[in-house]
Image (cartoon, rainbow, N blue to C red; front, side, top):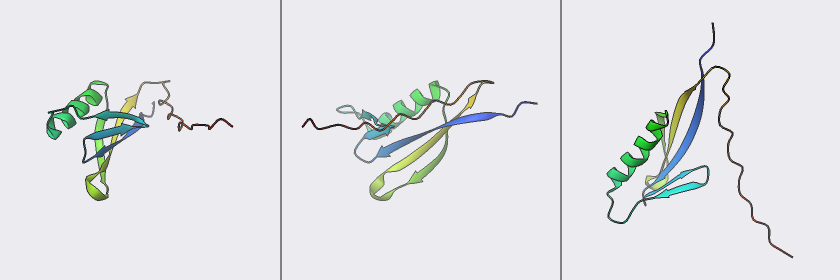
Length: 90
């Protein structure tokens, strides 16, 4: 019997209308309501098979939203993106 496996994604939402997923940011559109913006992003993630399983509230109206989705047998989780570092030329 195969053990069900999952992968997870952590998404940062802030009160200014910015959502960040491993450094990739989505910004609220001019004139877009915050609720419509959140729904647009959540529906996009749901369409990719991600299910919201938890919220960790942060100070100043921000929050981390934790999503999970099932992995098919033999499938590995998406690797986390490396932190982008900039080097300064000498």
